[in-house]
Length: 452
Image (spheres, rainbow, N blue to C red):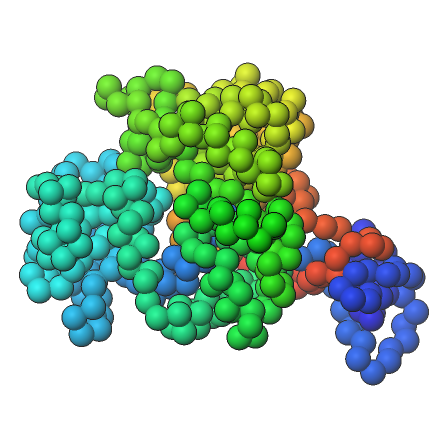
């Protein structure tokens, strides 16, 4: 039993059995062996990060941070000074080159090493900048050209190759990442990693029970769920349940590959679809037939229109991952169709400068949050780690403050209240019959900054 917990302004004792809350009663002040004394702290439902690439996040914790780099020379300097491990690839993450005055060149990264592969992944992981050794070693010299930039599927292939490490090593990294997440109040994640359900079978068999996991699958592996008769929410093994069918419909803003109704400002580029509309509809229909909920990546406004169309044609609800640029009439359609907006508040803050340049004059309907709330669209929060760090309090802070520096909030009309933002990070409440996945809000400086 949890004693002396502050819930909705009342001091209560909370009892549970088999992971479910069975009673909330006024605090008695008594205590028994095994009880937890909350000491009057506020107790609330544990937090979920609804969009994590767990293998990539776990590895990123051990890779060079390129976020501070504002030109090619800065990237070279960071990677030159980053500790290397023998002849292993030199890998960095966090590249933001959309607004660089100088275009990246493969020759620049050759200055880091002419004997080891060098890979600098963009912050959104939709592109990667590589050196000549990497281009030759991984058979992409014909794609790399003089820039050394690979986008979308070509980038994803290299990302997957870089995560191809021994299972024991990868599982160890994921355990470290999961324990760090739990320490921040995370009780569960939705994983959108390009891996197999058998990876989670193995981890659970080896004792993984740190946090709950919704393990989602991409089209190449969705047959695993179909063959095992798994529907969204069904138990895969232990703390792992079946997640969603994940489809990457378009690209991203930083790589100028998000699918747009109108061109990116100052260009004739409109991005494009990574999955053709006919194939998108077929996959959504197949998922519906097998009881697997689709979660469709859409960033550009036209991509969002396309995926909403697909949901409407098939007659099924689901999630739109990111939903970064959604026209007001499409927001209304999402509400009518019962579609969930799975969004990452940190992206609005991290991308604000790029959005002001590339989506000039259109940012009033970019990175909506309050608009979704007002329209009645269900909203869930995630980090998209490693694109942003797996830290729910940072996510909540970005949702409420809409700025990460001394500048005024970016489109403050889209900011949420703390209560609203917290609810977007939770799947349950503190009530009888709800999961006993509970956390207490301590008075440390970070949480105090959120609550102010």
